[in-house]
Amino acid sequence: HGPDTYSPTGQPTGAPRSRMAQDGAYLTTAQGARLYDTDHSLKAGPRGPVLLQDHHLREKITHFDHERIPERVVHARGAAAHGVFRGYGAAAGITKAAFLAEGVETPVFVRFSTVLGSRGSADTVRDTRGFATKFYTEEGVFDLVGNNIPVFFIQDAIKFPDVIHAGKPHPDREIPQAQSAHDTFWDFVTLHTEATHHTLWNMSDRGIPRSYRMMEGFGVHTFRLVNSKGETTLVKFHWKPKLGVHSLVWEEAQITAGVDPDFHRRDLADAIESGAFPQWELGVQTFPDTEDQMFAGIDLLDPTKIVPEELAPVRPIGLMTLNANPSNFFAETEQVAFHLGHLVPGIDVTDDPLLQGRLFSYLDTQISRLGGPNFGQLPINRTHAPVNDMLRDGMHQTAVHRGVAPYRPNSLDGGCPFLAGADTGAYIEVPAQIPATGKIRDAAASFDDHFTQPRLFWLSMSPTEREHIVAAYTFELGKCWDQAVKERALKVLANIDTELCRQVATGLGLPVPEASLPSAVVEPSPALSQLGEDWPVD
Ligand code: HEM
Image (tube, rainbow, N blue to C red; front, side, top):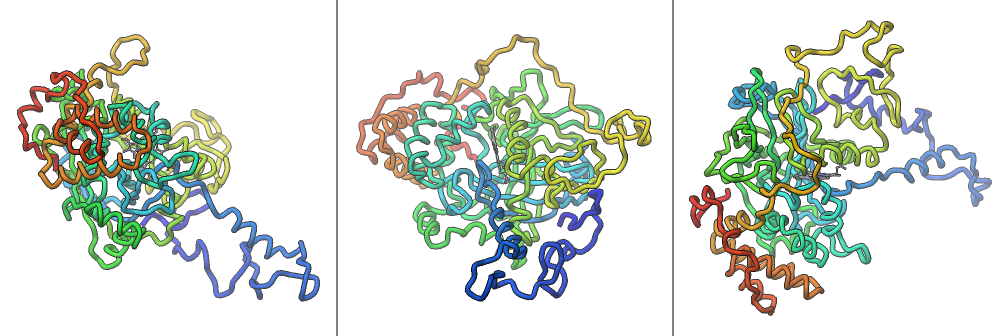
């Protein structure tokens, strides 16, 4: 676990957790005065009225009145666990990140989530799942904020508010909770066809996982690793569950949502409590850091594309074991704050426009969700590395800073001894080249193809998996009111595969449209077409 208590300067003291709260034999006020009665308010006589001077009544009710904080704007419902990550050393040649070295053990905290439902929604709905990992490394916190689906709906973060507005319940009735079965979702994903690939994964069995313990995780974006010689490698991160990938069938998912809406969080907590610790291997697909950042015709900066594992195998670089449940949901699972900008030396970002927007969004939203800029001091968010920053004051400041000169250089607090060079473990951004070009809002032409990879995904499915996909589209689109949206969705399916489109159209009782795209666009690129019809995605 993370450190439990902190000295006034914010360093862990190692004192036991019980000193933080609920200590001592007597019930007290928040100020420590012992109470003799917490069930009756102070009144002018046994039948009242109640007196304003009852400070215990006011403290108790006022604190309760302010117990809630805003839920996350997305990924509101989640469950989490503590664990440990052990590096294999296999990535030592491509990254200097110390926690990936052989045998190094690093505490982690992982939060799994659904995306669209609110905090009280059911676990087994059809949705993407979040898979966010906080590594408390000796070089600072590293967050890998991923999902259980390797691609995303959009290619540019500027559309994130739009896709979420479309996916969240309708603003008039706030229906449905965490289901893609509604008009605005289908309206968006059929008008923004870059969403086709992610939507197809959602309609596959991947959208209804059996357990958090049986999900893959993906960093989605391409990241840039750098080794001690300054050499760089592009990578995609993958979590592979030791228990394998398993899904529910739709009927199970629906019944379970009613019978046990907490199914996934219960499953995770029960498994850990009984000693069946879930494990994942962390792996990377590696690509040369070429000037165009393409691999086998695939734009590595386009988060709607995968790189098939046949073209770039996933190499295992470490093992994560989740071995302890949180002891307080609010303090840990609710207050944890992940951020793609939490990077350690050896790991850097790329220019993927979705990733770039995320670098802004997480800190920004957490400032309002967690009430100001000091949530990094909360026990669950606190780094295990020493902190010596120049951030001061602000809402909910708990550190008592020393010195008078929070700026560098200064001549009052010991000058400027704290800036580290590259050789002393500083985080130094890779000086990646920016192409000489004018400002532009257009996307790259390499982002235009929205159908090749959905088609390959469909072709890689077994007959049973295809049946499930057809049933999912038919069910979800069947819940739409707007005829034009359904017809547009069928046109999108026609561009993926004629048979998929025909079966869904038959299920919906609608005519089968023609594919609107020339087959050249639908055909796989030369590198991908070598993979053939039985291209596996697992
Ligand atoms: C939350 C993943 C895209 C904004 C999350 C969480 C995950 C996640 C796992 C839950 C974190 C937790 O458990 O606390 C992803 C992935 C994305 C993606 C894999 C695409 C590859 C985006 C984009 C934006 C965004 C493009 C905005 C531009 C947010 C926000 C939260 C969030 C605001 C709530 C954070 C909080 O309140 O703590 N995301 N996300 N995400 N994401 Fe994303």
